[in-house]
Length: 92
Image (tube, rainbow, N blue to C red; front, side, top):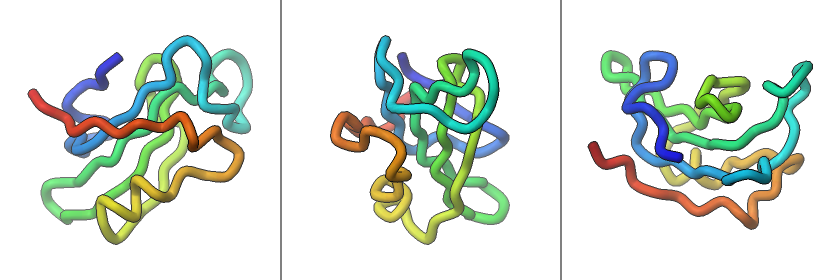
């Protein structure tokens, strides 16, 4: 499932979706704790790049600031199944 063009006000550059089986569990409560999507995003004004971890509704549940897009794509936390992550360039 493709994300919206922006997450938390940042433009989506790359994304990955787990499908029915989540990549793993974040530390929050309820169904929203399951991470189904990752997105590499960039804020227009500052140029800052972030890797977002998202629930099944593409709501951001965690983020990490990164220096480059490649660093963001490589920064999947160890508690997630990174072997299943397949990055897609976001195209409108």
